Length: 80
Image 1 (spheres, helix red, strand yellow):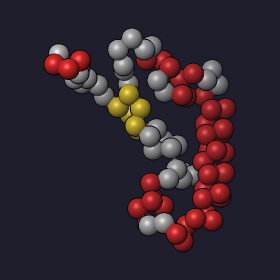
Image 2 (cartoon, rainbow, N blue to C red):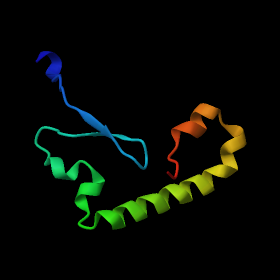
Image 3 (cartoon, rainbow, N blue to C red):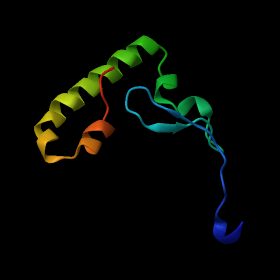
Image 4 (spheres, rainbow, N blue to C red):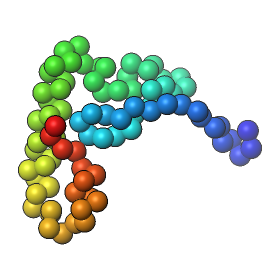
């Protein structure tokens, strides 16, 4: 490839807790480590920890809510 650039055609899945787009595959990386939830044996424990982190993020970010746009507020993680 020209200039060492390789075009990757991979699919992504959106993380339910944080809204991040996670690749479902990546050359030379085991797919089971790409999604953090897959690295936890206890999926329910992962869900509880993730929801707790999102809740703490929301509580902390509240102090900045009036200083940012609605787009920024909407982009952050939210407890579902």
